[in-house]
Image (cartoon, rainbow, N blue to C red; front, side, top):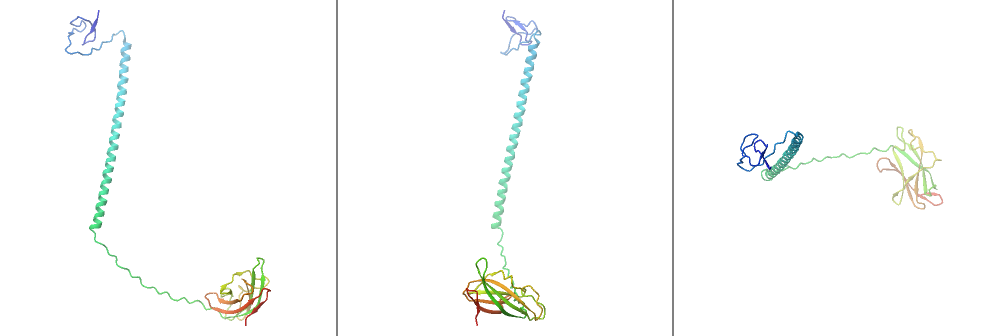
Length: 250
């Protein structure tokens, strides 16, 4: 016999029955609807599994819905932040343009007066006068050094004519020129005594020896100058020859 189910209690009812023998309600349906069968108490396991499955589905749906809501809220927050930043940037740009327009149109031109700098007069520098002294040529020598250069050795006597002790090196210098060019100084003759740094008492005399690289067979001017300035104290012209002899011009 075909069975139908009560729309009120879900119990099986014979197909042609008008009233449910279980709950007493009429079987007439006002509108078509789905009847959920009532599970038999003999099979509690099936109902329990279905109930737990429904709860699991409901929990998954709840988690998905919660995640969707959180993502939507975060997206809205980011969008609002970007919109606020754009609005602030646009406002600052407008303010800058307004300030520039005010600066060019509203402010008067500022004229800076010329500043006159007073002239500064620098006093003339007076170099110290070289101490009184006398010089004389003791000897000249022409030799070739180990590097193959022609060297003129100048040996002068220096007499201190000042009233106090003096040193040659702190007051004077020797130079040699050929054709208007200064000759390069080199190592002196170690065999000769040298009083460059020796203290010389008043009226005492010291031997001063210096060496210069020259060109043979060319006239050379030997001079003693003040250490500060170009003042010439003593001068002599010589002619060094290739054989080592040195003649003094009259």
